[in-house]
Image (cartoon, rainbow, N blue to C red; front, side, top):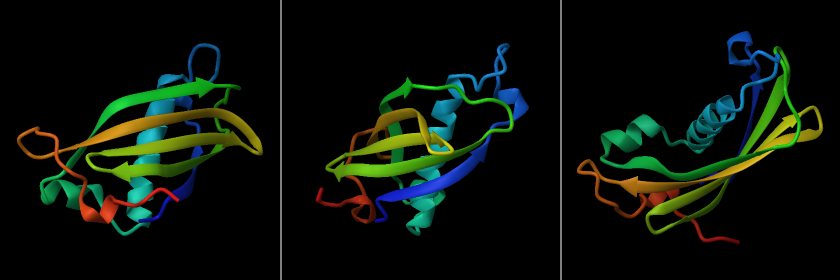
Length: 130
């Protein structure tokens, strides 16, 4: 499993608030995009996981904001898988505007089956922390 991946995201006009800043709720959407692309870059599609009966649901998520972003800013999102054992996966997120860290966050995902019961992560997602 790939442990870290970066994508670029350009802030769209509809993602900004009345002050012209990227609305805080959109960072969580960006985090989801980062998780999806991290999996994809490791050769795993979320669609495939669901078809095989595994769902990853957010159990916890947070974000710390340091500096705002505005319409048309080009952001760089680094998503890192920091833990994947048992039934949980932990991701770290770092959002950069040029070289400035403007926000960071983390999420804990729980693996459940089709019936909604907690189950172990698929082997393709597991790794030992180094």
